[in-house]
Structures are given as C-alpha cells and as structure tokens.
Image (cartoon, rainbow, N blue to C red):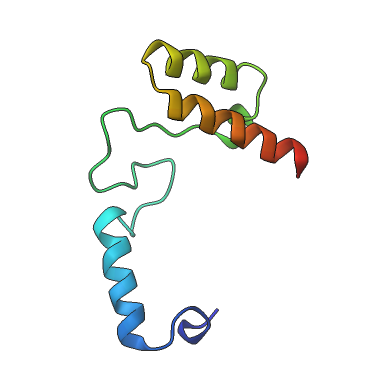
Length: 85
C-alpha cells in the first residue's frame, strides 16, 4: 500500500504518523508493550484466549466488581458482533 492510498499528501502522512507515534512505540511489536504511556491496567492476551469460554465472564465480573459499566457493555457488544458476523 502506498502513502497515496492512505492520505492525500506527504505532509498529511507525516502528521498522522507523528500522532500515532505519540501513542505507540512504532519500533515495537506485540507481545511487547507497544503503548508509550500504558494505563495502569493495560494488558494483552492471545486472540484465542480472548475468545475462550472463560475469558468474557471473567472480564465482565471484573468490570462489575469495579463498577465499570462501560467495559461490561463493550464486552457484550463485542460478543454480539462476533456472533452476528
């Protein structure tokens, strides 16, 4: 994919790359920590683990325990999207 396919000009590309670089360490790859300033609860997991029968109930229980209703709803929305394809 060329720069032209993503942005209208080189300056726009550089601007976007600078924004992305301010959040992500572009020279790192998963499973390393790719965020420049990770949150206190930032974790990564294998995709297959995230789709396991145990993962979502545990995630939802943690969200409920901590009163994070947005995470609880996001998990449900994600599962619904997976099931409906």
